[in-house]
Amino acid sequence: MDEIESKIYLVYAAFLHDIGKIAQRTGEAAKSYNNETVYQMLMPYFHQGKPSHFHALYTYDFMEERKHFSYCKVGGGEPEDNIATLAFKHHNPSTPLQKLMAEADRLSSGQDRKEKDEADEQDIKGQKAYLKVPLQSLFGMINLDKEKENKPKDNHYLPLQVFPKDFKELFPQKKGELKPNYGEPLTNEYKKVYSSFCRQLDEFVPEIPKTFWELNQFFILCERHYYSVPSSTINVPDINLYDHCSLIAALVVAAYDYHRENGLNDTSVGDRSLKKYILIQGDLSGIQSYILNFKHEATSGLAKILRARSFYLQMITKSIEKKILDELQLPPTSVIMSAGSKFQILAPNIQSLSEKMLHIQFQVDKWLLNRYMGDVSFQIDWSVGFSGNDLLQGRFTDVLVQAGSALDQKKNQKFQSLLFQNVWNSEQFLFSEQYDLLQKNGACYVHGYYPGEIQDEDSEFISRVAKEEKEVGTELAHSEFISIGNKGKTLPFGKFSFDSTQNAFRLHQAEDLIPSYSFIGRLPTFSKGNKNNSLILGIV
Image (cartoon, rainbow, N blue to C red; front, side):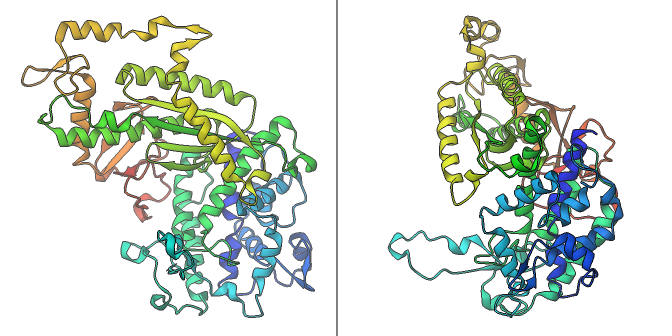
C-alpha cells in the first residue's frame, strides 16, 4: 500500500477521533447506547461503577453512517486497522496501530492523567458541566504587570459556533456578554456545529484525497467547525479541538514512520523513552538589513519594493517548508509552528532524514547565495531528537531550549554546505559572474552594490532581483490570490504567480498547482461553486 495514502488515513482518523465529543455535547443519546457488544469494544474500564468515555460511542455512530471510512485500511497494520477503528477505538485499542493512535492522543494532551480526565468529564458533581463549558481565550491569562501577579484573571470566552462570516463575532467575550448565558447548556449550539459539519463533510469532501495537499479542503472544514470547541472541559478549557487534532496527526504520522523502520509492536509503541521524533527548525537571517537596504531613500517605487521584499522572504520560507514536507512525505499538519520567517516541523527519527536535510540545506544555500550574495541566509537544524516522555509534564520546554541553542550555532555557520565539504571550497568565496557584470554595467541603482543586469525605461541598470521586486510589489497591490506551482517568479523550490478572483479555485487535477497559504488569516467558505474542488489558492 502507498505510504502517503496510509498517512492520509491516519490524519483523517486523528481529526475525526473526537467528533463524538461534539455529538455527545448535543445532549442527544447515542444510537449505539444499548448495544452491549459496542460497549465492550469501546469502553476501556468503568469509572466509579459507571461506564466512561461515552463520546467513543458517538464517534462509532458517526462512522457507521459513513461506511466508506472502514474500507480505508492503513498499511503495515492489522486487517481491521482503518480510519473508522483507529478513530473510535482510541480509548480501548487492541492492535499496535490503534495503540499508536491512542498514544498520540495522550501525548497531545501532555499529561499522564488523560484517561482519568476523560472519565471525570462525563459527569462532574452530577451537573453535566461538560455541556456548559465554552472555550477560554488565552489572552485573559496574560499579565504584563509583575507587581500584580495575583490579580484576578480577566477571563474571556469564544462563542461556540461555526466559523462566522462576520469577523466581529470572532472576538472573545466576557462572561456577561455570552449567549447563551455563561453556565447554561450549549446543547443547541453543539447541534448546529455537528449538523453543519456532517452536512458539509458529506457534500463537499465526500472522497478521501490522494495527496497531502488535497487535504487542504478537509482541514478548512475541520477548522471552521472545531475552532471554538474545547478539546477538554476539565481544568482550564483553553485548547480547541482543531489544535488538539492537528498535534495528534503530527505525532501519529511521525511515530508511524519511526515504527515502520524500527518495528511496530505493543512494547515499542508504548515505550516513551525511545526518541521517536525529530524537531526540524528553519530560520531566515538577514531580514531587516536586506529589506531596508537601498542606495538612495528617494528610490523610485520604494513602497512597492518594501512590500515585495517582505512578501518575497515569507514565500521563500514557505517554499523551503513545503520542500521538507515533500521530501519526508509528511502532511501539512506536521508543521507545528510557522510564523514570520521561522518554522518547526515534527518529523520521524529515521535514518534517511539527515541525508535528505543535508541536500535541502545545500540547495537552499546555493539559491540564496546566488540571488542575494550573502545578504540573506536560511538555517535548518535537525539535530534535536525527543521522546514521548519529553512531551509530558512541561518537559518540552527543555527540548525547545536545546533546539534554540542548536539553531543559534547554525547561524554562525552560514552557507557551510557550500563553503566547506571536508575541505574549503575556495571557488564559492568568489562572485565571479557578478563581478564581471559589475565591471560591465555598474551597480544596480536600487541596491547599490548588486550588479546591474537590465536597463529600465530610463536606461539605468537594475539587477534582476530589484526588477522582480518592483513587479511583485505592483502585483501585490492589485491581486487577491497567489498560487504556488511551476509558473511565475522563482523560489528556492517551485515558483509563484498571482491570480484574479474568478480563478480563485482550480480543479485538483491541475498538476502544476498546489494549495497555498492565507496571508490575512482568513478561512475560505464553501459554496456550490467549488463543490468537489481542492482549495489550492491562498488569499493575499
